Length: 243
Image (cartoon, rainbow, N blue to C red):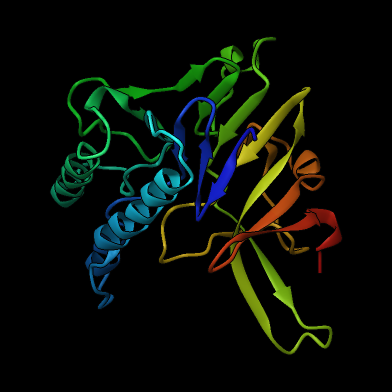
């Protein structure tokens, strides 16, 4: 068993590594600043989901050794005191489960400021044959010949499923898994509960290839794993779900 999808996170039992996608801490606060009346539920939702994830790992008799946040830990491109407080709260919460040295922080395009103030943000993290990076910049080290699997975020993938008549449509967060440069690529959904993400199976879905280290033509051949309420479901290739 190489990896497990646990909610919106992924766990590698052999290495004891849990990888979590884009948190975007402070997203709700940014909405409030723009004048929208939204409750601040993000931190509690993150904690609740992580507690469930940790419990699943323990119940399956695995050991959690490291937690990796693969970028866009914060939301605003500038300094926000509330984001800094949210960051500290999450780190202190995580220290109840792993040592601080085993909390790995990857730098995303939103992470313009290191709230850890200890230069903890990394461009990538490599452990054995696994590489973790945000996905907005290509680092040659992650394509080293010893690397078999690369885990990224950044795209916030989601898919829209509709009835045959197209009357009812639902949008779901999803994992994307496929091949690129002879590596297995796993793209994580965002951990942000408020927004599902970017629809990858719509004909209107477009982004320039410089947006991600994985070109769109390759991503269309990736397999979709939809995050359901109780488990993650394999829905086949993206291109077969294009509407």
